[in-house]
Length: 239
Image 1: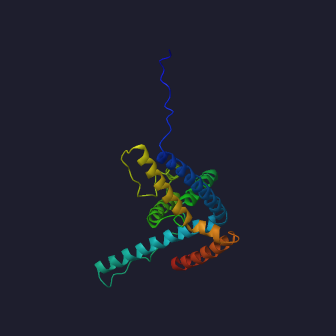
Image 2: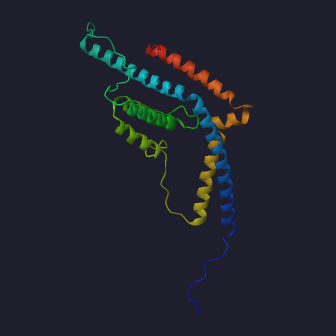
Image 3: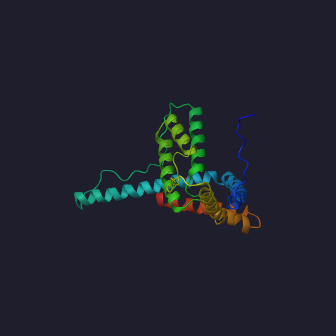
């Protein structure tokens, strides 16, 4: 007689089976909606790339200028009312580029920079406020590296962004081990939460409510143009 043990073919109990069926159904719905949103985001990126990047660069510049003005006022206050700085506040709008860098390297830097910016920029509608704050910090660092560091440094930061090692989700949890049914319940609960987030996201609402979602692209272009114009006035940036 063969001593090999027969595989366990005992079917799971009804609750476990129901949970597995529910998980599969919710997963399919989540993946379908995710793909719809991702496809729409790709269309938005195609039309809005330059506007998004210019907005983030001007926003960073504006914050830098505000901080510099605040520091200057504080220094004047500490030194006395009549103190005057020898030179006015200098704007740092120009990129610092080494003229000795070959054009191919500059082109690659620009490509990596644009890819990373579009992947992590904080204007995404799907981000929570906490994720937006984290994304803002990452884009600020990205701009700094692009303007002031070499290609290798940018490559490393680009890789970190796309490997998700710079995680936007600051609320990740480590859960203790549980039994199979409890694990399935937790999985289903998490999937249902993700589904609710997707269904209540701005982009999904646009897909559901707009007869032609591409009209939203035109609205966003106007939004970014207005935002860029206001930021240029605040930073006194000229074309």
